[in-house]
Length: 286
Length: 159
Length: 110
Image 1 (tube, rainbow over the protein chains, first blue to last red):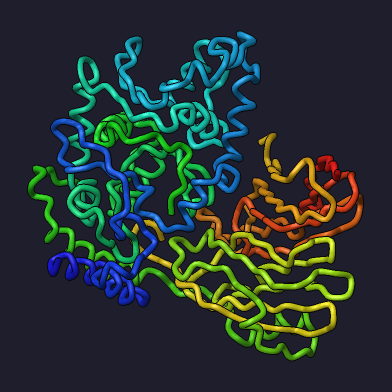
Image 2 (image 1 turned 90 degrees about the horizontal axis):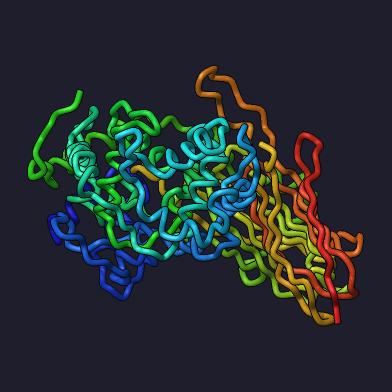
């Protein structure tokens, strides 16, 4: 505990409001913070075999009551603006083939149930690992003969969230074996690679130090089960790769491109680190 | 640019040193933006309520605000006042100001007897830790004021 | 984007006379504050926000709000309306650029 307190003090030392946070962290359990992780009132999922984590915790439990309330209520959750757009696009005919998503996949609730929980996946035709955004754009370019949506466009975000939402509550369930194995290994290497001027790896924050404060921010396990996510900071829905870019920039490293092989590989490794956590898409985070 | 390391080399000690250094740099980089102060709030208030001097509304106006906001971009704000909300007696307006934003005005809620309840909520942006001031104008001309502080978390990766 | 500024409204379709109904609304809008600078040019991005919200009940304004740049993107508004006679609830969002986005729905009071 002493060690932890020192780390917190260092981490929040430059912030005026930091002292109060440090004090309340070490004080009696009677003072509830409202943050489930700190109050010891959170759900865990058993970590998959070989995981460095003792238990899996959704980022939901690291957030304040106000942020969680936005996620809990489908009406208050602003991500549903994009979700509704996704629903409309599902049956919108586009492209040379004169088809919509619904032309092939019909009822989204039936056809997409569980799909979002299983991506990224190995794509045989290209011999590469692809994520859900890329799968959607492949449908557009190949089946619909339509233009691919731009990364981080409202359309691609809306459709990705809409498809993944059909797996809400289902456990994350990616395959890391067979043809996916080499991509998984690359993703793992990325995760532990120190980078940037701050010389930090993903693991520095999200494996070794989750539950501690980095300045005024409570570090989570960096789980991906809620993406695409409405972030208060962004004031809009955003992709996991946008979050990766933000993380990389925070450690003063040059970020990779959205949809790059590096990030898709990392996405698979990260999904496995949360294997079994319920899909929360679209989640709300700070 | 990157240094390959093995997993066990990523330690809490390393974390503490880099974070301490990083936050010092970040604090230096974060230039203070122009912001409102009490005089600007008074001026904005005068534009809306004229020369009326508000009475203490701490027992009248309920402000529903978080003590600590995780991110200043989306801070829940609720106001409510007990009132019969009849044609004779009702709450007309509640104006909300923030004394640490670039501009002090936040929102003015306009109620009518047909609102049924003098209660409304929205979400606001707060540039930093600051006071939220609410001023209520009643149908009988009485004016009340109250305020509360919201701490805004800035820094780390969520700021 | 075609679907920009699409309102979402959660309001009852039926109510009993005198019932005080909770209404929640949300609309997609960036609420550009006029305080941000373009990262590339360094120039101030002009303000464009929804500056006024109105709820009309059978043509009469029963609740409204004047909004400033301090209101968050995708503005949310929750408030109350007292049920009188059957008719129509109308919701209006006024944009700085003069556009008005609206949504209306029937209310049956019995």
